[in-house]
Length: 553
Image (cartoon, rainbow, N blue to C red; front, side, top):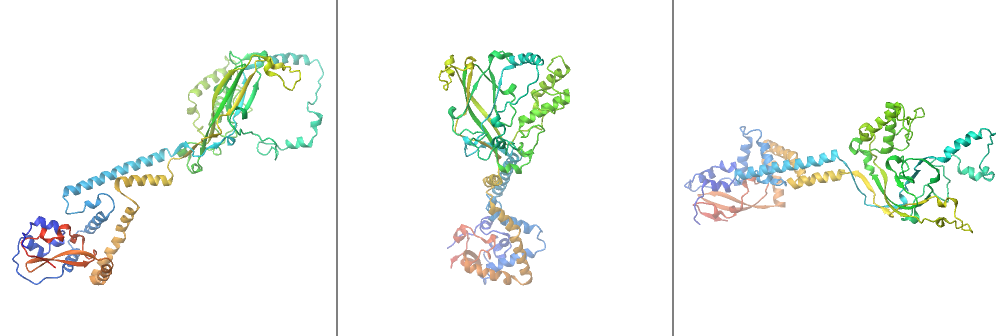
């Protein structure tokens, strides 16, 4: 078959590498010299390539960074990361290689930006409040504490009692016990109250358990209260209306009736459906510092006047301390030391003016004046839905069914009210305060970003470790054996083993006597350098050989 000899650029695109460019046989063909006559075939190609590579490696003029560059390009060629394999390929145009290099840099910068956002969010807001996957039964939720106050500040009985006490000074004292004689020395009754406190003061097997829990939803299983306003005893009220003020709160919080109470009118039946809001904390939050989780557990901070820490109790204690510091007194409804006097109610007094000035400032900026009062990690609050209806205006409503004469009680005409407090549902979905990203989640999110942008994985990291350690070590060992024992002592035995285990066909082009021939050999990829790997056209010599005779053996 007669063909034309290709141009130098075409030939170099097929036969790659500096090794072949320095070979005298290929230099003659490159320059178009085909009249070099018939001659005996030279050394085998692989041996000639190894000899030339060895001379290149031993050349003292080779820069010191040549080995690093070669190792880096080998990593790019075999790396599993996206786009790197296109950078060291010399058959690609320079613009293509620059394009893939810039693309890789942009992808790496995007990955770094996204990872920085993930870590910033983890460091600044590591705790999130979400709904728990499991419900809480109704019998596990504490029933709210109920505080009821009559709107009447001063009862007429108190005023009348002052007159009675003045009149009683004319009579001799008559002191007696109101305890029944039958109950006075009973051992059972005394034993129930011995060494009493809030944890172990109850009897071991009581018939009724306190505090009580509601076991079923609805008004039938809740708390019902009959309220007698005693309107006939009103003397000085807190408002222009009559009735009660009610507040539902947790047992550990002060009621603060002036701020949070609800009004209950007369002759009404009120239904209060309660829905608790429960906030729990994941046990892993104990390992977080306060600056990171931004909340306190009850055992981490002790209050001076309250046994259990809550943010509301801390605010009350802080207000009392501010009043004592600025006004040398405290409000009557605040906790205080026994030696601290109560501020005067006379609006013209210095204490009262100071009290009103300080409380006005505190109410608008309480978190500024009390920065030490932070929220609790766990909490319980109650949301109330109220429904009202008017009672029948009849004393017949209050019949005592135990009385055979069906006589109404004395208080039947006192404009009574009925209050029903109950849980609305039998289960509740609690909220839980947990860390936004666990260790596994943080690693997974970071890995997802790196994989999305770069195709990086654990094996990619192992590849980097391999090229920095194992590949460098064996390259040094190969040079050592070549310098001291020759190539055959180190490479030939290992090469023969790999040839037998995994032979690979390689097309070898060898010049001889003015023509080319292709030879199919069973050689290892280890024996053929990267620059010797031929691409598809090489399997068909007629595609690139020039005016020479091509023979296939």
